[in-house]
Amino acid sequence: MLDALTFDAGSTLTPDYMLMLDSRDITGNISDRLMSMTLTDNRGFEADQLDIELNDADGQVGLP
Image (spheres, rainbow, N blue to C red):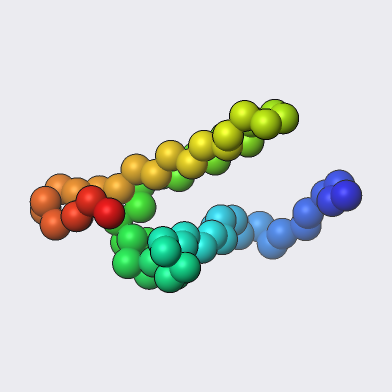
C-alpha cells in the first residue's frame, strides 16, 4: 500500500490513462478534447461506469 508521496515544490500531478475502442488505443484521438473523465467502481456484480466529457465546440466529434 502506498502511504505517502514526495514531490518537488510546484510540481503538477497529471493523471495517466489509456482509452481503448475495439482493441485500438484512441487516447491520442481524444486527449486534446478531454474535459473530464470519471470512473465509478461499483461494488459486487453491479457494472462499473466510466463517464467521459469531451469538448465539441467545433462540432467535429463523431459518435462511435
